[in-house]
Amino acid sequence: MAGMAATPTKRWGSEEYYGLGYDFDPTFFLTTADRALEEEIIDACERVIRPLAIEADRTGEYPRASIDELGRLRLLAMIAPAEYGCRASSHTQVLMATEAIARYGCPSTAIIFMMHLVAVAGLVFRAKGNPEIESLLRRMDSEALIGTASYTDPETGGHFWYPKTSGAERVADGWHVRKTAAFTTSSGYADWYLTQTTSPDFEGDYADLSVFLLYPDEVQGSPGVWDAMGMHANQSGPVEIDAVIPAGRMVGAPGDGARSNDEAIDPLAFLQYAGAYNGLAMACLDVARRHALRRSHVQYGRRIADYATSQDSYGRALCEAQASRMFAYGMARALDDATDGGDWTMYAEQPDAAPRAAFTCWGLEAKVLAAGLAARVSDQMLQLCGGRGYARAAEIERLVRDAKAGWVMAPSNEVSQGIVGRWALLGPDSVDWWNQHVDERALRNELSKMSAEEKRRLVDELSGELAEPAAG
Image 1 (tube, one colour):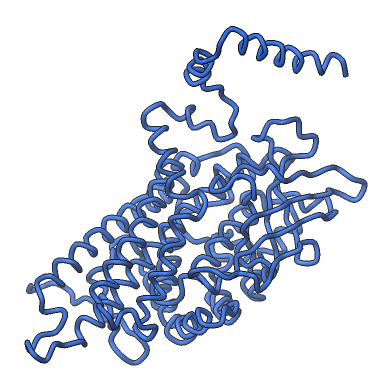
Image 2 (cartoon, helix red, strand yellow; image 1 turned 90 degrees about the vertical axis):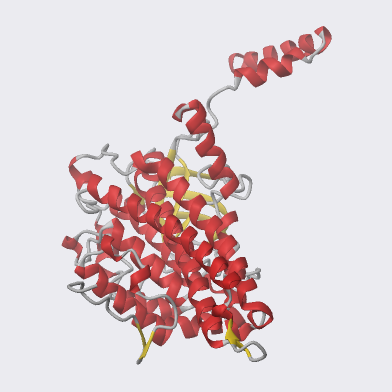
């Protein structure tokens, strides 16, 4: 149309990008600075991250060169305040960066970046006045110091916030931290670890949690053990911690862990889940577009893209992808509006401030939408590519394998959907994050099934339990 500015051409090295152009990206959410950074990320993906993704999928090599690129782009400490020499990025910029890394580069690297930045959020939440944390943030980009959040528990599955096999005690030299983690991204490769345990003086309330910063010599990781369907480069593995660390490496005060989860860890995790898996879905659409435009059926004189069935399948997948992306960018914008553009300095003066925690349910929904999107769209685009898509050279089969991880990553989609449904139907208190509320309806129903003798035995058993503290 006359008078409309031309859409810039998306570049892939010296050529036009083979996938969807900027006219199918929600660039209206991005500032000029955001768009300039996105171009830098695409360039780094074309030169380093995408080639290494293909190689790492074959060998399982940890993508250290890709991490170095993220440091060069000043992405590793991007959310940290400007006083530390960092970008002080908005939530929107974080979302854009995560999506771009997954889409143009490497989904495994996007997950490494996600688990790293989630841990950074835990640090910046309580950074002010802690020399150890402040020093780490200042050095993070220049030294490309990759971190990770080690929060999962082998006994609680997709419920990553519930640390049964952990603990911490006060000792003369600081804190004795014990932790067993089922899955930790970058296990054995990270330069620093953020972990959460039950607090010192724990008395059975699993909302009483504390957060700690550790270094590799204090953590027994599992380098090279990751052998999975996809996400080969992220090197997820078990972690064992049994170490005494200095007092200054508790992040925040004892018992601050639940607040850290709500206000720092979860908001970044859910936002980046959305970015990573929306980006992966877009990568599938890009690769399928390349195939559909290049592959022809000579007998009909038509390309794959010329068939109405292809156009229907591709259009439906793209519409679904755009819906998930718009949801994620809308949430990022809302987070920015609530935090003055992604500010993390407020907590020094207002330690109980919780503007990000208000978006927990929206974050769960964003994760469900994006992980489900990636699983479905990857399958649909594999089918569009046909038999040739099954070959490694087409790249779509790698993306299909990587896409499956999002559904089961904690909190799994089943767990997340259940929380959203319970919250919507019964209110936020019904979520019962720490398993503290008795389900009296279920309890009374079970009791109604018991005979009088069974009830007497239960009464005797409970009476014995009640008498134990007095006897002790």
